[in-house]
Image (cartoon, rainbow, N blue to C red; front, side, top):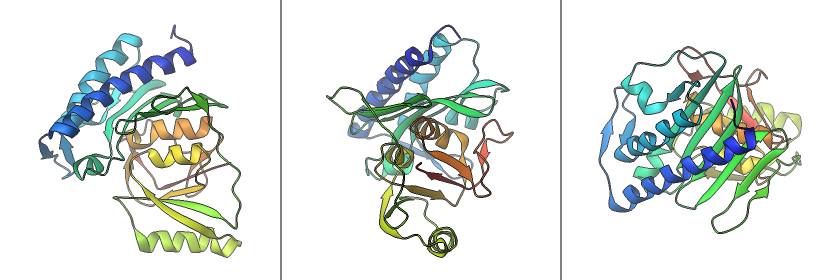
Length: 261
C-alpha cells in the first residue's frame, strides 16, 4: 500500500465523516426501517453511509477487499486473507432508531487477523477516534484540534464498568463480575451504559476500565474500536485470554473483554 498509516488514517477519517454527515441528515429528517433475515433492523442510513464509504476505500486501496455489514447481508461475501477492510457504516442501529445518539461509523483495516488501523466517528457529537499503531491513538472533538489519548492503568478498588445499552445480559454479567472481579479483590465503583463501539473508545481515552461483552457480535462491530483501544495501550481478549482475531469464516466473534492497561 502506497499510503503511510498516518496518511491512510486521515483519508479514512474523512470518509467516515462524510458518511456521518449523511447519517445525520437522515437522522434529522427520518428514514425507513426494515428487518433483515436475522430479524435485526436496517435503515436507509445504514445503506446510504455504506454507499459513501465503499467506493472511497476502493479508490484508496484498490487491492484490498472490503467486508461491510450490509454488503455481506446482500451477498456474496468477498474472499479475505491477509489484509482486508471491515466496515460497519452505522454501528448502533437500535440507538439510531431510538434516537439515543450513541451510534458510530466504524472502519478498520485488518492484517494477519489483527485490526491495525481503526476509525470510529460519532456523527451526532462530531467526535472521531483513530488508532493506527502502538502509542498512536487520538481523539478529535468537534471544533477542537486532535489530541493523543491513552488507556489508563486501572485501580482495582475503583473500576469503571461499561455495559451495552441495547444488548445486556444481567445474569451473565453478574456471574462474570463475581468470578473475575469480586473474588479477586476488585470492586466496581461505577457502572455506565453506552451504545455501539463508543465503549472501546471510552476505555481508550482513559475514561473507563472494563467492558465485558457476553453475547454475540460480528467482526465489523468491534474491529475499529479494538484498533483504537489497542493503539491506546488497552487490550481486547476472549474469555480464555486469547487475542480477539479477525477473518473467521462466518465473521462472528466469541465473547470477549475489553480493558485498559
